[in-house]
Amino acid sequence: MGIDIFLIALVLLVLAVIYSGVVIVPQGYNYTIERFGRYTKSLNPGLSLIVPFVEQIGNKVNMMERVLDVPSQEIITKDNAMVRVDGVNFFQVLDAARSTYQVNYLENAILNLTMTNIRTVMGSMDLDELLSNRDDINARLLQIVDEATNPWGVKVTRIEIKDIVPPRDLVDAMARQMKAEREKRANILEAEGHRQSEILKAEGEKRAAVLEAEGRKEAAFRDAEARERAAEAEAKATSMVSEAIASGDIQAVNYFVATKYVDALKDIAAAPNQKLVMMPLEASSVIGSIAGIAELAKETLGEKK
Image (cartoon, rainbow, N blue to C red; front, side, top):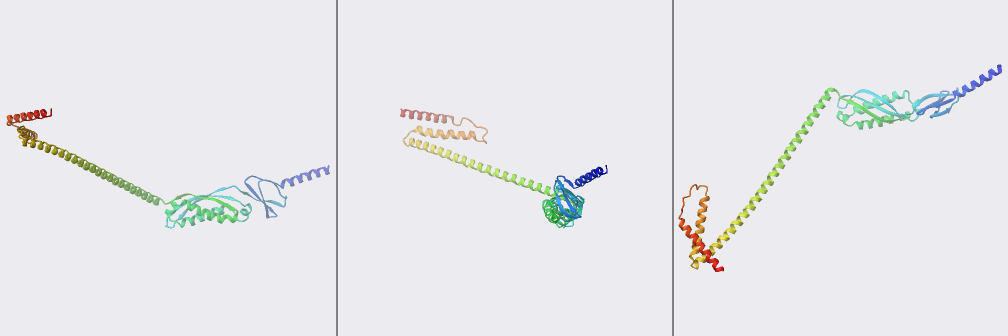
């Protein structure tokens, strides 16, 4: 019975020793292994074996990308403006051994390094640059902090400034400045619109004047042409009457006198200052002249036949 108990105890002890040497590393982690207090290797995710009582797990390192909140802090800019700034830092451990043995309290070290460089970078800029060049600030911080954390086996993937809060009086001044700038732009646009309106109006009036002048020119041309034709007709009629008179035809004289007489009566009747016309104005002479015209027409038609 004593031998059986001893064997059972020995088997249990062997099983316990073997179990203590089995290490299961979860996904996203690396374990550092120390032998008598000295680093020897790192275990990747999965099942691994170590020498019991000789090797032990030194540190369990998270290899996934992590987010580190950068607390709010006050910064004095280059133009002596006080602003409050906060942000976030994204980093990932690439080398478990260096992140464990090259730096103590890794996250605290990264946080302080980030806050210090935020003050350095943003303190060298004016307030206007600070508010308008946030992407440049992020890029400069990323380059500086990533280079500084490289010996620790850490890769800083992003640094983002979340919020920049100027003092209240400065915010009010900026709001007044923005309002004045908007009013200035509105006044400029209004003046520009008024100027364009005046230009278009002047161009329209100019075009109308040109068209009116062209219309007057065309009308004058038509009037001149009509007067020319009337003068030609009058000259032709006068020539015909003169020829008739030269041939001794008294009816032609009566025709000429009658047409002039009738035209004179027409002008008298059309005059705006003529209110009353006394008749007859030697009506018998007019009738005689008209009769002469009729006789002249009969003779002319008779000759054509």
